[in-house]
Length: 158
View 1 (cartoon, rainbow, N blue to C red):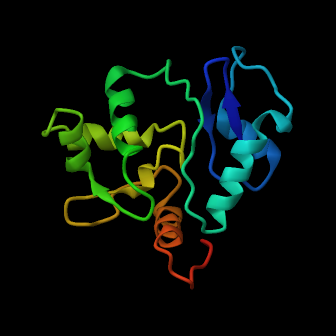
View 2 (tube, rainbow, N blue to C red):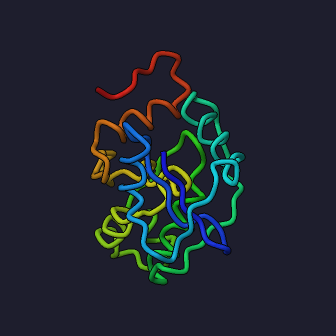
View 3 (cartoon, rainbow, N blue to C red):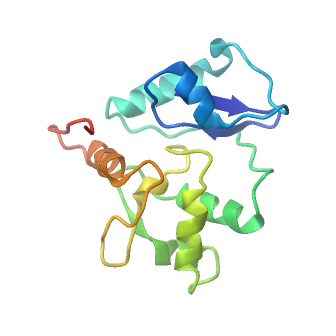
């Protein structure tokens, strides 16, 4: 798992990766970031560990959303209000951001989500309760939704 932050807060995370090198590559860091010791993010790492074991987690971290458009920022803020274990539609998010006809644009913004899990874009479905898309693939999206459903029998994606 990769985490990147600035002096303002967390600005990027990755979903679990096969190796540290792959996580760093997925963060797509540039020269504005400095490498921090893992201890710097220890509380957030613990929250992620709890999340991936099936515990409901409310991520209480400062976020740096400065590199985003105002539309992306409003979409991510709306999505962060979706409670753990619940889902909403792309249309619902579009309405929350004041543009009810922007469901497709909401999907595009979520496809660029730099903070997966913290901004729980996996909780957004199509109007017909279909899975829509997910940048890491639908298998992982289904896994995350099942993990949050409090179902005692969930299996990691293959």
